[in-house]
Image (cartoon, rainbow, N blue to C red):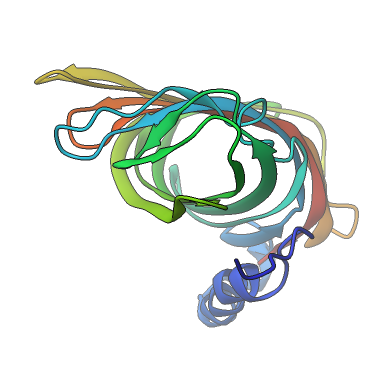
Length: 268
C-alpha cells in the first residue's frame, strides 16, 4: 500500500474555495458607506474529535458493523479546513460553506469484517482511511433584525462526499466512494452586544424516513465574531456535525465530528 500523509490537509482545497470567492467579493457592488454589510469570507481551521460506526453493503452481501476508532484504529483528532462565503441583500442571506477532513489508521481485526463485498479475516492487519468533504449552500431570511439581536431561518442544499478505504495484508484494497445530497432547514440567532462583536448560534438539520431509508443530520455551531478593524476580524467558536444514514443502496454510516475552530474574517 502507498504511504499516506497523516498530517492535516492544507492549501489546495481551501484555496480553491476561497480565492474565487475573494474575486467575486471584490467585484460585488457595495457602497462605501455600507462597508461590511454586503459580503464576507471566513477561513477557520477546525480542530475536531471524531467517533462513529458503519456497515457497508454490496448488493445482497450485507456488511459487518465496525467502529471507526476501535476496529479500524482511525485517528481521533484532525485539523480540518473550513471556510465560508456569505452575501447579504437586505433581509436575505446566502451562505456557502466548505469543510474537508481526513483520517488514517491501522489495526489487526479481532473478528471477520465484511466491507463492501470483501471479507477481512480475524487477525488480518488492515490500513484504513476516511475522508469527508462537506459542501453546503443556505438561504436565510431575517424575520427579526434589531440593533442588538437578529433571528433568521431558511433552507439549504448539502453534499456529503465520503471516501473510505481498507487495505488488508491478505484481502487487498476495497474502496467505498459515495456522494450524498440532502436538503436541510436552518435557523440562526445573533446577539450584538456592541458594534463589531457578534455572538452567533446556528443550527441546520434534517430527519426523514422513506422507502426503508432514513437520514438524520444536524450541524450546530456557536461562533464569536470580533471585527476590530470593522472590515477585518477574528472568528472563533465550536462546531458539531452529526450524520446518520441507513440506505438500501449502501448500508449504514453514522459519524460525529465536533471541536473548536478559530480563524480570520473579511467583510466588504
